Image 1 (cartoon, one colour):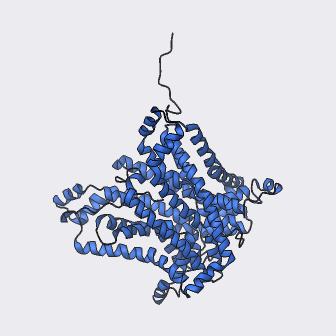
Image 2 (cartoon, one colour):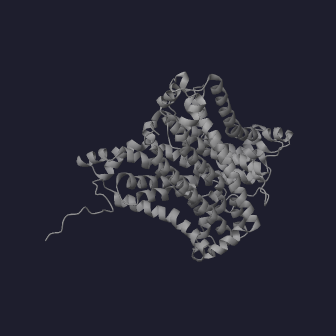
Image 3 (cartoon, each protein chain N blue to C red):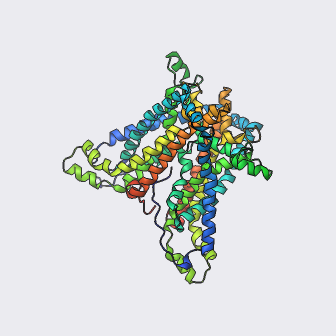
Length: 292
Length: 284
């Protein structure tokens, strides 16, 4: 969701234009304390609980065949959903940023729509469409195609909730970069595809990596939407987050937190790479990164 | 007589860049099949119920209680998130302290951490025998399995929205205005409330609306800590899941459409705030 922007250096300020030292100190302590209590403590809890009974108990959580199949399913879903949204995002930002046409703003709003829909509703809409009682349900049943409570439904729901990630990162960036470089390349006789590969792609590669990273984190961690369409069939339609839920509800806390720690580590890695990218390539990540 | 040349309104400006048809067509197909068609299926289902049917579901005591819990608590949580979000954004952009970059990265944690993971962590932290829950219990406060738990989860999930909408605007504040204000004799508090804060209000409101919208729809980080007691700590998204598992499609659709309407109203409010801000202050 967040737009890439590097944290600018704090410029030295004259005493009249800042707060007194004690006030600054108190406010900083308050902000850091709040973040530590609300954000960092839950993260530490995940690892503390996961290792509460030692390394062997931790390891045992992953020897379960159900855990392995959940990990496999989550990787499969992400391997389909993320490239799909990557291709969609590039196509959408090419159409929207490189051309002028009527109704653009409406399109951008529609692409952003999934972000403002509750995850549960995001799952529900596919049940209404493909479920046994859904609009296409009878036809799917007659043709022996299963979408809900199966892989296709989970993939669709995941694509839905991660739909805007790539497009919303690329559109403002490509709009700001303009068409001049592409037009020059075309004038020099390059083909359209060649221009995209050698001119456009290098300009957006870091933003692309950045948005794919966030898209992947959300795709692997999505819970609400997937919970609705999955049916919670152990070993078959349980993703990692759903497996975490089941273990937790069975009071198998160590295993639950152990599996959750994999997702938490993924989140940490995502944050570190994300911050690194923002640090180094802020200008190439987002439109007006310095201004915005 | 030849007609005078009039500039024609075009649907599309001509361009030498290739690939519009392919990119536009692909985008529209995906958007239509993945987003618009399924959402239309929900609206079609719900319109089958009619307004009276939706109203009937909405006024069912259990549904009404769940909607009240979801909306009421997410307003409170969004207020908290906006207040502390402003503080965090201010401290991060204005004060230099060791580890500032790390703290800045930590703000995005709720974006990156899967909601179910956050949910079980918060639940075990605030449970009566948990690290924080035990301390609260000494004060006679039970957080987990009560509405207070829902509030905590919603603050967690809404905080980054509040910080990240205000932060870029604090960066942009022209220091000279503050200095001018100080030179003209205003004390620091006066400068803050009369010079710095007013132009930031639209961003604070936008952050509040985003945190609110996220809180209303949130599911994963809440259900573990909420206790899910009907009429007390049951949130609307959970009730959709319950209705679905009971094959009560009518009920699920009605609640979903109400929540969808609220999301769109929030989106509209955000757009109005930004349009107002553009007119009033010249930026979003």
